[in-house]
Length: 90
Image 1 (cartoon, rainbow, N blue to C red):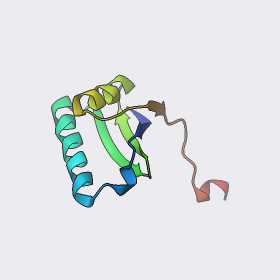
Image 2 (cartoon, rainbow, N blue to C red):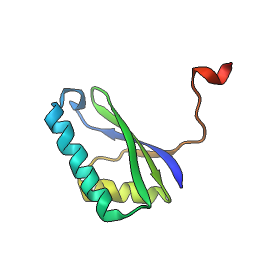
Image 3 (cartoon, one colour):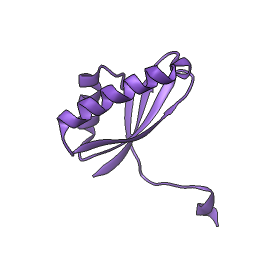
Image 4 (cartoon, one colour):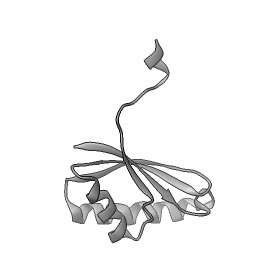
């Protein structure tokens, strides 16, 4: 299973209410439950006009299918090639 970062353009994302974010999350979870264990959502980061989502999947096509089924934008799916953090340089 690979890890991927998904870029989604969503103008005004940073102004979504807590309820709107819960609704988006619920829809995503509903679609994922229908798709099985080959794709899972780890977390998302909300910025002013974009969402950056982290997914695990056996095939990146499943992430694009999730977006289609859920009606979510999906600008780019990029495989994670490595992870660094402040401790990496120590």
